[in-house]
Image (cartoon, rainbow, N blue to C red; front, side, top):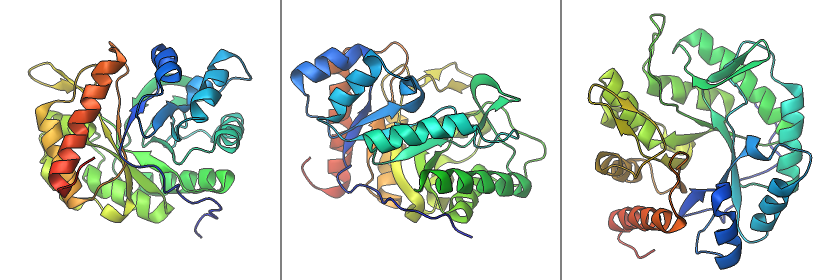
Amino acid sequence: MKPMTARTFSPNIKGTGLGLRACHYAHILKDLPDIPWFEVVTENYMVSGGMVLERLAQIRAHYPIVFHGVGLSIGGTTPLNAAYLSQLKGMVDRFEPAYVSDHLCWTSLDGQQSHELLPLPYTGEAIGHVVKRIRQVQDFLGQQILIENISNYLTYVDSTLPEWEFLNAIAEQADCFILLDINNIYVNAYNHRFNAMQYLHAINPERVKQYHLAGFLDCGTHLIDTHGAKISKPVLQLYETALQQIGNHPTCIEWDNNIPEFSILLREQQKINSVVASVFCEAI
């Protein structure tokens, strides 16, 4: 049985958005920069009141937003957190984000948050488990959500599927959508020695609704997804392939560590817009 979906995706979300960070509030509200939308880390605003909610409301008055969560623990084995879901629904009802997304991972056990995005084994059993929980979330929210592929630094001996088949199967069976993180694909391909192009070619394009781009740390023998640097050339090349193979979808630049001045983010945005324009032969 498929979830009941009362809401549909907002058609006004397009182009290259930025992750909303507190250090940029003043600049955004003063200058109202030409950004099509902002991505909001949901948990940063799950409070009863105060300045952060006031700032979010002020920014929401000028810009569309999407919600991106890190604490749903959709792959966890303990019951979904009812209080968390109620808070999330209240935020959705108040701010009306175009998309609601979270990560394909588990983050907590027995009520204890790890504050890490922990990977799942790629098995049929895990697919069934995650699908059931996504359906519960979608039924509660009254809308479909997006799930994001994570960067991971270990594999399970029990895994029987490649990551892309696992992601496709969950999106199809849960009738949800995919937030495709291009940087995470590149990092995982490098660390686990698989072909990133094969991943892109295998993803069901009809399920993808958004992209993520970010920077990584090159440690020589491995890469770490830090969200603390400019987007690398090979990730941009992979993004270009994604645009060609999967299509043009809203793209968010994530920068969470060593957060730069807003002007640097604008230059990164212009870089992404140039890639999109080159693929689709149009001005942005």
